[in-house]
Length: 233
Image (cartoon, rainbow, N blue to C red):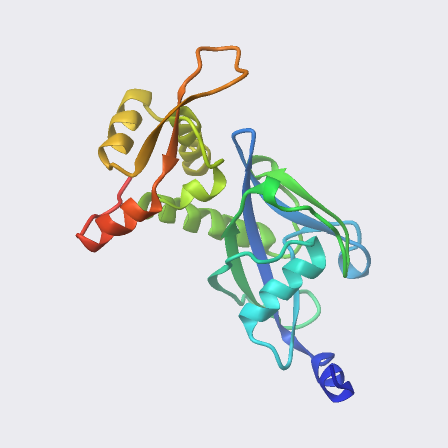
């Protein structure tokens, strides 16, 4: 990398930032990834992973770079939420932040705090409080987007193991939507969509009656979409 390029990259835009809402699932609980600031205005406080954008990089590239630098997580598909621009959201000057969100399997990634983060950890969404600036609002916006999307697309399967039970799937929907579901109705509705491949396998090492395992079939889903199928839950 040339010296000129390094110097150019060091210039940051001091009025635009990125903040990422990363959701995961752990033992049936919906969680969000947070970082603890190492120093500065918010030393030791918890926040969404994010930071400043370099002058010569795109906002998508900035989101991925910041997530890697702060948490050690990379190769994640991040989707834009919206811009947050309340004049009072940042105490020192006018700063607009662009929110992103993603769904990942927690077990697929090793967390490594870095850059301006002294710690990085998963927190249950239901227990998160006292985040810096307007990060609680950004988290709530991400949760609303997730709730809307999971009713319109089968994105929830991104949080499950490759093989899962119908009860695990129902608990996932309950966690994200924040409400209890009727088991027979859920089973009937999800199986009617024909998106799941039943396996000749059952749960192992469980204290209760072992349940049948299923897999999501993305090829079937794509074929149904081309025929006009509308996923609606």
